[in-house]
Image (cartoon, rainbow, N blue to C red; front, side, top):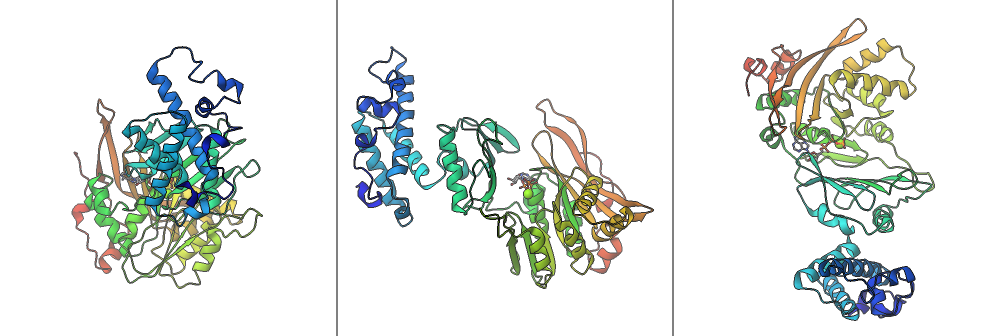
Length: 477
Ligand SMILES: Nc1ncnc2c1ncn2[C@@H]1O[C@H](COP(=O)(O)OP(=O)(O)OP(=O)(O)O)[C@@H](O)[C@H]1O
Ligand SMILES: [Mg+2]
């Protein structure tokens, strides 16, 4: 059975290759080599709760089988194996091993064990069920024994665990080596993209103090569309109508927000208002955007390889993009020196461009832009920097993850020009918090501020005659 996907040099029977293996379950099948584990074997154990003992033993069997499968299976041959073949092969190996260890499992336990072994061999082990669960947004691993998920905006501790740090490291290694990267003591953190498109970051010892840290932003095949976001209460239909006018009339837009606040989701949704005839180029560190238009060129920056060579930065992509006749450029997140080229692009004929930025308010996002320009080593008087920003950026859309886990567009602000040295802005819409329910849900409502849009003439000229009622302050829920 085993032969087809087994390494040539793999030994045929579990019990024969256990020599240096500490797992107690295997030890039970044959006199134990590791003395500290000997005390744990079933025969010598002091009387203990039967169920607990069984669970412990099962855990050890699993760990041993996981390791054995990875050691013995010819992983290269697995690429061509059909899922059915592989499943029956794994189930046969497991059956054989369980028999050797004189362990009887019920049908459910067998099915779970087989699935876990399958996940371990073909996928990312204990993370696999969480990756398959569409209700999970983020997976956050703090060392081998603590895995959190984010679901509906709230963090939950799961009972998912890795056997130990080595097990966790093996999974991390599997992910990063698949994309030609390495993570170790001298190179302790890494970004990668999983096969399903999810964004992956890992940091290992010694920088991660209590075990490796892993963060995964799950890739959503079905991105939230404007209608979904309106239904979820992320913003109102009136705000959507205003945003449609803003995108269609080619205002340059910055989506600002904290980490995980929904920036990429909002950017993706806004992009749906772009006309299908336009040529759009997207630039991201990890390709997450999913534009619906036909004419889209996607670029993904690349970190240096293990020799420190071959890096292609977002700025490189952006410079090149300007030679590729784009109608619009979308930069997934502006966080460094590419800010210069982004502002230049916005100022010089690629209006209608968009990006996101980490900031807590519209005013703050402008300060972040100023800081990024300063950090990029551009020596320009502050007034000139500000005037460059104010003429490049037309609109700042602020998104936030509120304390009850809900994600909302908390403010839409127009940039209207300069007053002396200060960039002038006017808020058009905002989320007004009123209170908190006993269940800690936020009570609030969206409202317009009653200000006339700086771009109303532009909207009208382009055929977006927004009704005045959109801009009237709204009170109530
Ligand atoms: N309005 C919303 N309602 C419900 N879920 C949302 C909403 N907006 C975003 N999400 C979900 O929240 C998660 C984080 O969203 P997103 O990736 O857009 O955040 P981000 O601000 O770009 O994060 P990061 O700072 O890590 O890049 C995603 O799983 C997304 O599907
Ligand atoms: Mg993002």
